[in-house]
Image (cartoon, rainbow, N blue to C red; front, side, top):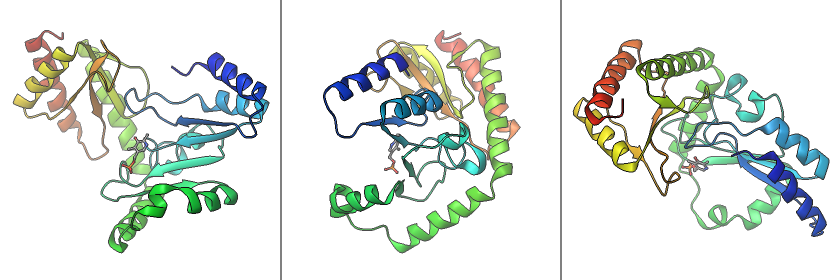
Length: 241
Ligand SMILES: *Cc1c(COP(=O)(O)O)cnc(C)c1O
């Protein structure tokens, strides 16, 4: 819930406990809601209390911020440790990264379990990751298309009467409430050729079941309008509208 008062309470408690190091860890973008962490406020509190900041940016890498540099860049701020995946927006590749100060990286090379006890990425996957990063660097047009698609999709669903969570991120949850309704809706959409999956407890809180849609730069206006039509029909069929 991005409760900054609570964060400050915890920082004070850590200081009072005599903590040697304090780190605030957060997702850059929260995967189930598509909401952004309040990084400028988090950074200000971190500076005030001498804490490090760590952002897991898996749902931002490649498309949020200038050149797809992620949520800190989106907010024109910086963090101490930034992690991302090559497996989501960068599609097809596998693996991820942790960027941070050299002492942190040195420590992780000795202590990070998956790093120590797993095989390295195979060369073809690494090559695909490098190729994907090149596409990201040159991807201003695709990013613009992505956010245009997201805006069109949000407006289309809102105009039909669906309840969305506010935002601009391409993760666009359609809120349905009860798990049963989310499952019925997924089935009714599947029947119409639109594949979605319902998310319900324990993945999201009870009573906040949803269908989590995600935009994609490759979808055409026609694709989106076809899917919007299916959402309208399915919504009426199952009583979500
Ligand atoms: C997907 C995800 C990961 C894991 O990424 P993989 O590349 O699949 O291992 C980590 N953190 C968050 C927030 C994620 O959404």
